[in-house]
Image 1 (tube, one colour):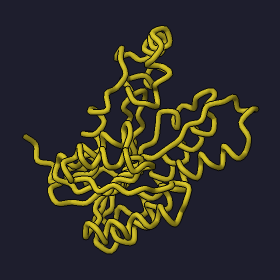
Image 2 (cartoon, one colour; image 1 turned 90 degrees about the horizontal axis):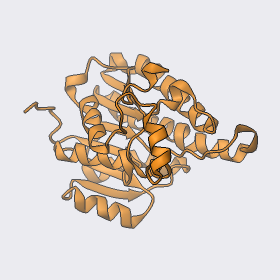
Image 3 (tube, helix red, strand yellow; image 1 turned 45 degrees about the vertical axis):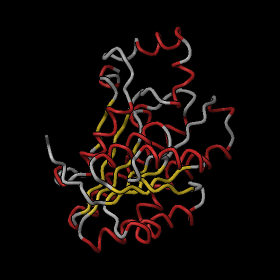
Image 4 (spheres, one colour; image 1 turned 30 degrees about the horizontal axis):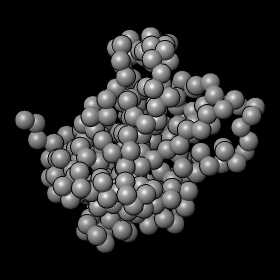
Length: 250
């Protein structure tokens, strides 16, 4: 069994109670990482804590509130004593035709998908740069690479997150802090419920994916663990695409 050398480390995972964020938090916890998991509801946070066997400490956080987001670093240091890993996973993706989506939606999307990761990364950097080590993993999307109709705000925000990843990676590499991104395609999560609940829509969606299926959340968590591990110390500014070869055929 490959030892990822994560035992005893501490991570912050945002959007930790659902989908890929939950998979990330639980995979890290299984590797011996203590996780501060940020989510929206107390019930879902308690469920995550229980499932992790106590390795996850849940905390409610409004990702639109920069004070709450930045405060996650202080909370991790206070409750868990250190900080090694940040997984910026929380995101929103309201759909609608570009000409029908007003500025308030765009502002909220960028607050959650861009400004929150920027705020949390900056706050975490104060700890990581002083320590000379750290991992930031930004969960973007293939929408940020290709752009998707009816998801203009989401696509733009994830594109911004990818360029943010590369820019900060270049600044922090010499200090021993790695910043990478994962760009997932379609995974079987609540975010894809409209697709998963309709046999016809699912068939149409799968025709676009060469692998012939959607990804599973349990396949995503190990990617996060690898990027969080010292074994990936030479990776920084990278974008790992996980989409069943969909984007490679477009």
